[in-house]
Amino acid sequence: MTAFLQYIVTGISDGAAYGLVGIGLVVVFRTTNALNFAQGVYAVVAGMTTSVLVLHMPLVLAAVLAIAIVTTIGGLMGLITIGIRGDTTPLTSLIVTLGLTLIAESCELLIFGDGPHSYAPIANHAWDVGGVLVQPQYVLLLGVTLVVTLGLNLLFRKTIVGNALVAASDSLRAARLVGIDTVTFGVVAFGLAAFLGALGGVLLTPLMPVAYDSDLNIAVNGFAAAAFGGLVSVPGALLGGIVLGMAENLVVGYVNPQYELTIALVIMLALIGWRARHEVSTA
Amino acid sequence: MSVPLLDVDGLVVKYGGAVALDGVSLRLETGERVALIGPNGAGKTSLLSAISGLVRPAAGTVRIDGADVTRASPGRMVRLGVSMIPEGRQVFPSLTAEQNLLLGAFGRVARREPVTALLRYAIERGRIMERLDGVYELLPKLRELRERPAGRTSGGEQQMVAIGRALMADPRLLAIDELSLGLAPIVVQDLAVFLRKLNEERGVAILLVEQNAQLAFELCPRAYVLEAGQLRLEGPSAELQRNPLVQTAYLGGGLEVAEAR
Ligand SMILES: Nc1ncnc2c1ncn2[C@@H]1O[C@H](COP(=O)(O)OP(=O)(O)OP(=O)(O)O)[C@@H](O)[C@H]1O
Ligand SMILES: [Mg+2]
Image (cartoon, rainbow over the protein chains, first blue to last red):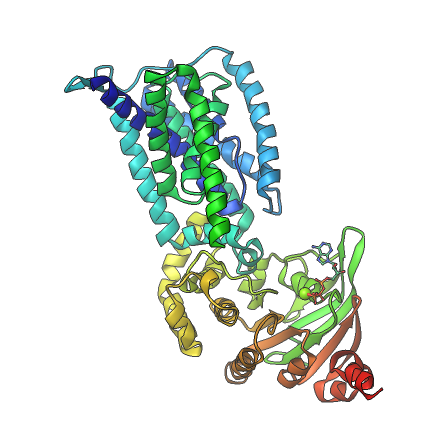
């Protein structure tokens, strides 16, 4: 029983990070109709950059700097992906961001080498809750994720800027016609997504070391999380991330660690299949 | 002679190598109602897109109040008082009718990136809310629909949302791409009456692109006929209506001939 609860607790924490990555995908998709394959890269680069910077400065400063760098990279990737016309389809964006991901991996390999990177969590002790070990890092990760989810949900539902972001994907033509600068808004959406991915990466890396090729794993988990909300729901992506995190930890604990990525893929495909049927039948 | 509100001179639009608009010149005075008719593929949408800044013309000029605005961005055109209702209405389906309307005002105050846009919007909020009330007064139906996602309203209601959204930018010129597209005749009649009132009482100039020539001639005292990227005819609607070429091609004259045989 204790083991079971331990898997659940760890799963919620991992899942919060997947949720952040998934929310990044949602933000980009809802505003530009782009599927951002590079979403995993942001988490990896942020984690690795922090692991190097932390040797020279306090952890918080290193993390903030890493997140700022990655956010900028994300904005630039956005400009490349959506182009100067701010116009893209899910398929072309997927191909462009896949290309950018491969380039990013090569750069990571050159700069950071091929080994795994990590650093110490905010606190090294763990609370013992009835035999279940709860690390402060878990609490931080979940707390930050909840705040971010609430904030973004408010942004999209209640503010005019959130509406303008949604409008740009609803009808690009009309958004431009009412005077929204859709290219700048798209770049900001990519920057925001990179910020979220970087935040997830910085918080997760002490628990789960990252290497240059970890981005695929993170991206697939993020996609699976986002698929829960049909790629358009911010809370849906968080919920998806947490369900996924728990499922993976249970499978890794009780069955076989090798199935971790498989679980994410199976869940994602099942959801996409279910949605496709559901939408056809209600259309 | 007075400076026209809109002065288009020798406008050329190309898509790749294909010429969609081949040197079109058109004028519209302040407060005027002008129609533009023509068959499918004539270049009507291309002309409006070039005026509104959505596509860059290859040659020619667009002037507003005499000032050259040929390659201005869509946002700049909105701020200059030119608003467009796109072909097929293009409401934002997942946003409510009211959010659609507010975005019409947002586009006018916003410039470039979101943070300052948000600030400018907050500063202008009082005036924007007043304008929203004004639009609800003009189109009371929109008040009923305010909470409904625009994608879940009828075609006629969507056209109202699109008109209201354009009015939220407080335009001096409203360019409408196919008012009647896919709408029942009675709905079109109501909208036409509304537009005439808007023009006569508030002085908003109207440039109406239409396939329905009858409607265009009824609503607009002056009209242009565009065919294959070039202007074929222009003049008072009353005269154009009597023109045999127009009767055959646009007013069902051809049908009468066919029936007579
Ligand atoms: N984005 C585009 N890319 C390439 N060609 C285009 C594009 N838009 C329009 N065209 C072409 O330009 C010409 C004019 O098209 P346009 O849409 O301006 O005509 P229209 O008069 O509005 O027609 P309709 O009444 O069918 O709306 C057509 O031959 C069309 O095929
Ligand atoms: Mg057209």
